[in-house]
Length: 498
Image 1 (tube, rainbow, N blue to C red):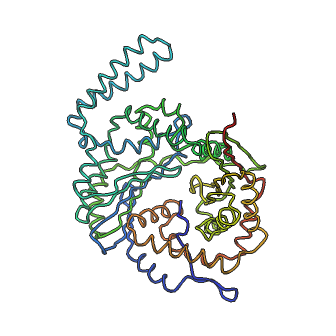
Image 2 (image 1 turned 180 degrees about the horizontal axis):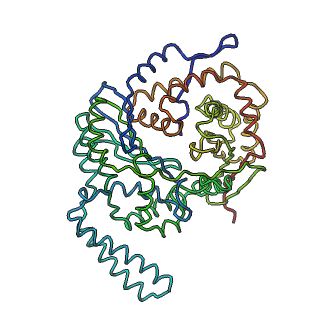
């Protein structure tokens, strides 16, 4: 999802046609001139941005697959695979892969037998098999060089080694000194050439605990999961990226391997290299290392379409929690022409202390401790939600919050936004873009988001003109189209009653 305030343009007046700020456009042009792109014969694409201010390089591998692409009954597999992608390969992380592989296969067999014995309620057999499983797991650990991938990166001066999984995509990233370009090529290409999904069962426990912390033991986590399940009837955006507990428990190492083989194919991966590099050298090394990948068939495309919502939906969850209020409206995907208008609406309503929600609900009325909103939830590759949420202040109710929040939303429909207010959010947006240009990792992320989701990284810069052209009439038109009662989902998180 594009960060709020990533783009903008010069203030406009009623007498002039909006235009990009002259001070920033030439600079953006120079940045675009330093971008090189190429595609290997196997379909894998690279985007390279030269920036020689410091001898460092940021890398981001973008797999165009996320929680929305998971098969029914196997939620959480994309996030699970992300975890296992750090466990190494046949040569990285193993002291003796041939012996390790035999034990990993034996663990899979024992796990299957345990599930069968549990289904048959044969407790004696379950105990016997679990004892054998623990013994095999201890043997498997003896072959593992723990965190070998991370150790190599750290010893070579790498920083920020991490990954994220969203509904839309999985991203792997870190930064290296500029003289470690070939080491990154070797490590990253091998990571997805011959991964070993070792320590699968230990990692399953880690992920289940992560789910308990983020969702099961988190009132707002449970609220969000319930809210999305209500807001969507068919689209997989309704499912949690971390997965449902029962699905996670039933996932197998074979499920991970099958998902990897389906989606981690060269033409579904895009890589950004941003920093102190020579594009010709990047291309040469990419052909050497990533050219080893065999071309594969493109993965299946998600074809599920969410039907239009025809009436207000409401959900209430009662837990040991402070009261929260949520309100969401369906909106188009990132590649829709009105995408920038939704961003501007989000900024007007909830970007900082000068935003309408903060000034009204938090500062003036003091009925909420916080009140915010943003577009593109839980993703923006497909039609999604504009979500608003507020934490109710003591001695006030979610109904008060709902009334005031709705009042601010209705104002956008009935009153044109002033030129001064629109200028303010455009100025904030321009500053946001300039900040992103100072970060290698930030630029790598934005270039790939636009490349994959809109068809070209150039749209990142061309969107500046689109935001400059947004008028009060555009804000009012989109607000009227979107903020309709039949397009609304309401969520209330209320304290448990005795």
